[in-house]
Amino acid sequence: MHGMTKAETDRAENRNTARGQGPLRPRDAATLILLDRSGTDFRVLMGRRHMRHAFMPGKVVFPGGRTDPADSRIPVASSLAPEEESRLRARAGRASSARARAIALSAIRETYEEAGLLIGRHGDFRTGKPDWQGFVRHGVQPALGAVRFIARAITPPRQVRRYDTRFLAVWRDEVAVELPEGGPTNELEELVWLPLSQARQQVDIPSITRTVLEELERRLLDDPELHPGGGEVPFYRFLHGRFVRETL
Image (cartoon, rainbow, N blue to C red; front, side, top):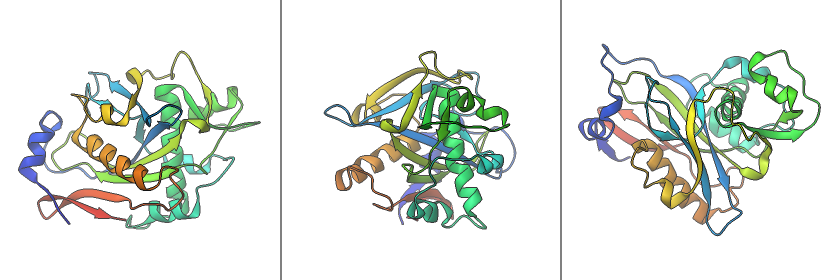
């Protein structure tokens, strides 16, 4: 294991330091890295968070948000690959298949809400869940078969919000519908497709997001198709006062 000291990480993320008392318990969250391989370079979709957000205001990030356990009951056109589900469940306490499914589906739902991209297959889709009515209206069945687990990171202590975030990836080919007006929540501004190398150089990118992009670039060099179970999944967290990198 290796990593930065807590002081070094505090300086890197000083704009996100919490003003409250004591560490908060991290909550499950997921973010989706949309990858486009149609050009000469891999490109990734990113957007800027509104300044009104308490957590990482103004930062350039991937679509994503907090996991809703109810998402586990949403019907899907394809399930997670067994290798990906196994790693999503690794070292996560009493993690179940339902929890892994909820994490992956929350990333897909948030990508629709924030970016207007519906990932899945065209077909009849029905659910009474309010957050999924966009998929119902556009006739898209959510699909998890192409989702890949890229990295996991737990927000350091002393933050205004703390999340146990899984960084997932999927190819743009898996997008069934792209809404020209964007998503219904408008939580992300200035959505843009950036080459991976350029994305890492964004001034307002969180340090953990930059680190995950670096990990993704290395993985793509070894496995440009992102096969199920391919490559290692890094896990970043604070342990004994240091920000460490482990693998799942």
